[in-house]
Image 1 (cartoon, rainbow over the protein chains, first blue to last red):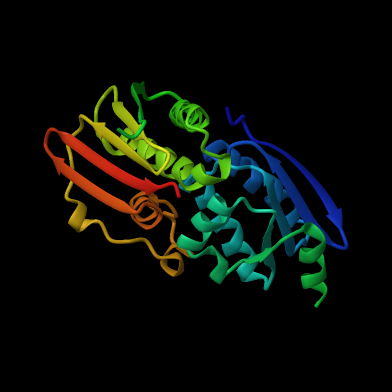
Image 2 (image 1 turned 30 degrees about the horizontal axis):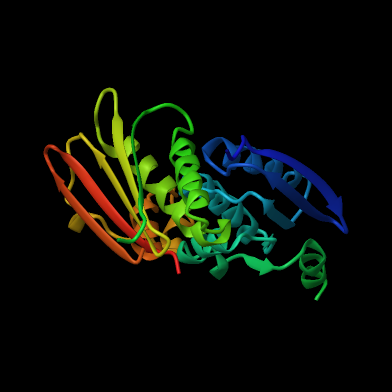
Length: 116
Length: 138
């Protein structure tokens, strides 16, 4: 069964990379948003969210990511999703997130796209 | 006759109970030899349907009935609550542009269920709400 979300984060080239494992529900979304806020307050504007090990999401959890996109929009920052399961990608597409966030296959691709 | 498997459960409102339904779905798929990839959309559908029913039924102690009927070709998900019901035609589809800048960023469940399923049926009255979702697995 999908487990409670755990998260590890890394700063690379002034970019925050968050890698999740487990269910992106309300508490999972809150964890992601809290980690983001910590770095956002320190001026980080480019964020990668790697969902490779999160195959189940729900719309309540994703609504926390809309908050992140909103904050990044205000400072001309950007959120890029990577390693998405096809069903998760479809979910985010239906919700319209890729109108305001990026999508790349890997973290490296995301980092390159920030440079470009 | 085509082989089918059926699973029925009654779920109370406790945190992450929707994952029990997802687990059941995965077991049925495994039994029928259906790959993990093919039930990806169904996982999201089940999750949204159960959460939606538990959140919006308006019952004091909500519970939902969940039924899966699965063949190698098709999955039918039936979810019902016993709440106050609502008028589905009055629920507007959420829009990301409006959600950005709005306090309420939620309310995506029905839109996801409609968009991800191959067939969507909702019946709601003062005795509760029934949602039937069909997903082709081929």
